[in-house]
Amino acid sequence: MLSQRRLFGTNGIRGLVNKELTPELAIAIGSAIGTYLHCGDLLVGYDARTSSPMLAKAVVSGLNATGCSVLFAGMAPTPALQYAVKKHRLDGGVIITASHNPPEYNGIKVLWNDGIEIAREQEIEVENIFFDKKFRYVEWDKIGSVKDLTGIIEEYVEAIKGHVDVAKIASKHYHVVIDAANSVAALAVPKLLRELGCRVTTINANIDGTFPARPPEPRPENLGDLASTVKAMGADLGVAFDGDADRSIFVDEKGEIHWGDKTFALVEKHFLLQNPGEKIVSPISSSTLVKDIADAYCGEIVWTKVGSVIVSHTMKKLGAKLGGEENGGIFYGPHQPVRDGAMATALILGIMAETGKKLSSLLAGLPKYFIEKGTVECPEQLKEKVLERLIEQTRGLNINTIDGVKIWFEDKSSILVRPSGTEPLYRLYAEAKTRRKALRLVQDFILKLKRIINSLKV
Picture 1 (tube, helix red, strand yellow):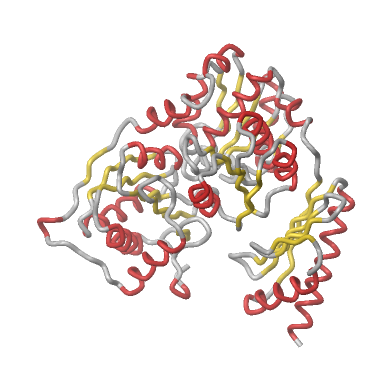
Picture 2: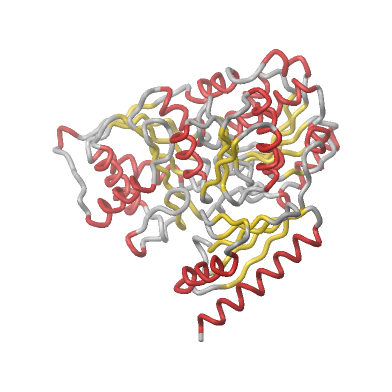
């Protein structure tokens, strides 16, 4: 985690608790953050992990030592904490969370005064302060204060309600099953949905930082209990959250689990019907389905590198109102340009209420793609050369090289080949109108990559 003067990964700082991410390290990181932000009023909050209160207190100590005053919000969903920074016009914030990682991990996210995580250029400045130990500690009588900040979940829920037709949703009396992953979604989403007039059933809603019921990553293979509960209870909708509640994966009334590309495309379609000509921001790893919808409903797709922070900052730069990822992250700019699982749930319910259709019917009307994935081991020192060779070999095709190489073919199939940012391998994501074609694309490019890697080893 600390090699080559790097603290931050794709999404904040992550590490194994008390091995890579210790209280001592958290104090130093807090000191670096406080030094970079030049004091001010900062919000601090955390997710449900067993180590989160410990690390939050350590970060607060580092912030106070540099003269920063802390508004301590305690346990809350990440998007609620982000909204609170913006709502209360604070100078920034720090969230203790490892999102979807297993319980033995934790992490630190740094927010700017708009609630968005700081950009990579700002992360580098924090890293330089940390590694050079250029902390700006204040005199004993200038140490920052700590005050509790209450009511942020209520404010967050009210803000979401302001972006949907509450009366129309309430008139449908939807029954929604929530899988809160034993984490912070349980603190906000049931309240929101009840105030939207829904009947709410919860599973895995007791707060438990060991995540006893399922991993905090809401992948289809982890959501069997949610799907069976929706079917057994005859519910209208099921929704599962990750560990910090910024992502949501939906289950239709038939108990079918849908990956995030589909539900984002549904939101995108209805957004463009009301806002033609708008820019839609999405990582290059997203499905061609997202582009199909943009093309069909007069939108303009803007591809980015993989990473939610990059999507947020691209939306901010362009003034875009909608972004989304294939993993269940939906960024609704009129509320806040960050991933927000509760906001996404309200948007889906709003679409169902407006159209009078069930989720299965709404999703059945979207273009259909089959997705296949693969990996190829590749030494770190060869990754750049491999990418150069692959770009050379695919020149002349319809490609995008913003993050690895993505190739679109005339039959609507495509493949993304990109080096992993965390492991010594390449990842492949193919999609096509048939599963056979998607699988063949993966197999073909695995062979192509292996040939390139072997030639570079000679």
